Length: 194
Image (cartoon, rainbow, N blue to C red; front, side, top):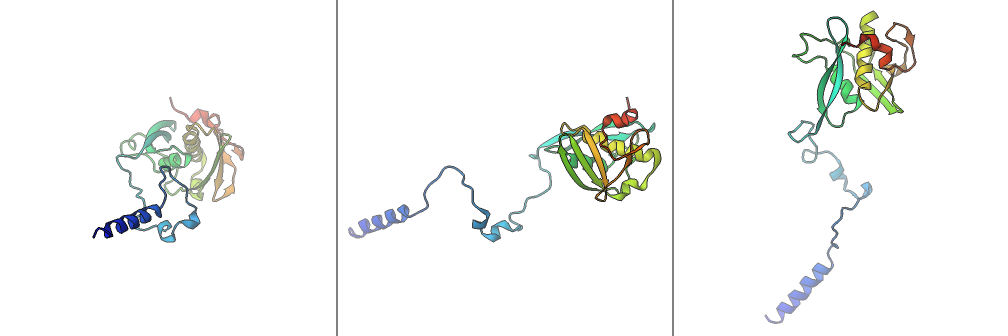
């Protein structure tokens, strides 16, 4: 038994010495070295999109129209960070139940955000579904103004170009003149409420 203890001790030291070296800092692992099964989503490693009590949120301003056709800013809570896509998504949801008695959206409920390019130097391109053009005249101008004021309320955006189903289009400014140029808040300044 006395001989067995030194042999076991030597074996234990050998096993410990051959182990993985200790490191107190995180190391990057190349994707090719990660087992495929760990990269594929499973029930065990997918993340939930449900907001939790620990989800960071921020407020953005979206613009809805009052009974006089003037735009009013409404604060909305979204998950951080505030992005143009999240602000537009909140706008496309329309007024809340509490807001619906005094505010409405000129944007049709079928309108979808198909893509966003930018912001680059304050310019953003919004690609929306053709449903945005299902309305005409003053309501279409109001819908465009809602989008422009909503995205330009973010610090990174001051001008907007529009695409419909991926194609560049001319849209009316606040005076009803068609333009393919970038639009900003000044383009629709007469539509903003007090």
